[in-house]
Every structure is written in structure tokens, then in C-alpha cells.
Length: 245
Image (tube, one colour):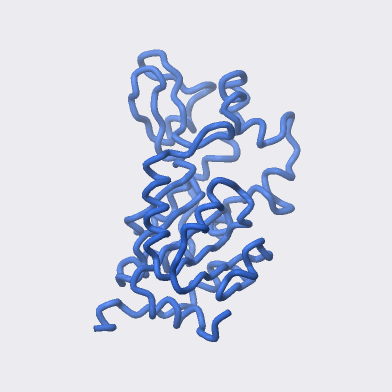
């Protein structure tokens, strides 16, 4: 453990990486998966983890897209204090990359530039036959299974259960984490693999965990904070990197 505060750690960092999960977006009104009010504790004809699997997408496309439109397309959601503070850290030169498990595009809406989306994004969709790209509104407004002008099915560029992570995104995430001097992990239970396994590549000075509930990594962190991510990050005063010189 360290005697430094989070603000001191951030303002002493020159290569900070942020690794975030669903807890970042809950303050923007987007439900997570595993909390008592999360998707996994809601009642559907099939369990959500089944409906978000590749095999279900293939075998039950109408049910897949009904659930997807209902629960996975919060297009009106806006960034919260955590998203904006991270964009500020990047602009100040402290933050080098965001590695996120979220698919909601809120980091980009807040102004962050270097964002590695491990599980893809609802804002990107493509025809499985011809490759034509579509925005999220096309999926939202489709009456049933979204179909391209060529007749092919339009698939969201999100990683479903049974699908592998994008190798390029994974490689860039590993590189960023391995080169970081500080890693802030927030809003994640660290139980979803392979994403949670990326922490083992960190070799820097300070590991910080911010989550409402305890995680399996708390004991290994220099600083573990059990609170709202927006509350914690929103109060930080970030110094531009050039003030170090």
C-alpha cells in the first residue's frame, strides 16, 4: 500500500492507463450485468448470457435483436464525471490510453482519443455478406432482424459469448498496460476473462482499484477505493504534464 493520495499518484504519473468496466457507465444510467439490478438478475425467457452468445445470435436472431435493442442500445446516454475527467487527464498528457470492457462509446463522447474497446462497440455494425457499415440507429429502427440492402444480416461489432477478442485491440491494450507507470482499474469486478487477465502485464509503480465492491485484486493494489468512480475521479485536480518540467 502507499501513503500517496490518488491525486498525488495521478499527478506524478507520466504514462497512466485506465482500465474500466461497466461500473463506469452505471452513473450514466446504463445497467451493469452482475449487480442486484443488473441484466443477469432480470427475468427473460432465456438467461441474458445465453441471448448474448454467438450461437443464440445465429439460431434465434429475432429474439437476439429484440433483447439487444431493448437492453444494449442506450444511445441517449451521456458521459458522466468519470468519462470527462479521463478525457481531461489525456489532454493534460498524463493518460496515455483507456482500455474498456464497455461498448457504449461514452469515453469517445466525452472527448477521449485513445480508447481500446475490448468488447467492441454498439456504434459499429456491418453486413455479414458484403461488409457495408451501419450506425446504431439502423439496428434500433429495424423492425426485426436488421438486413442490408444486399440481403445480408447486419451484425453489431460487439464481442458475444463464444467469440474471441479482436487480436489487434488486445495487442494494443497489452502494450499500453505493460508500458504504463500507473494503472487505474475502475468499475469492474475483475471476474470477466480474458479481459481481467490483462492486469498481469502491468509492471509499473502504482496499481489503483476503484470499485463499489471489493475485488480479487484489492490486496495487491497500492490503493483500493470502494466508492463511486464518478465521485472519486470527479474530485481530482489534474496538473498538465508540462508543469513537471
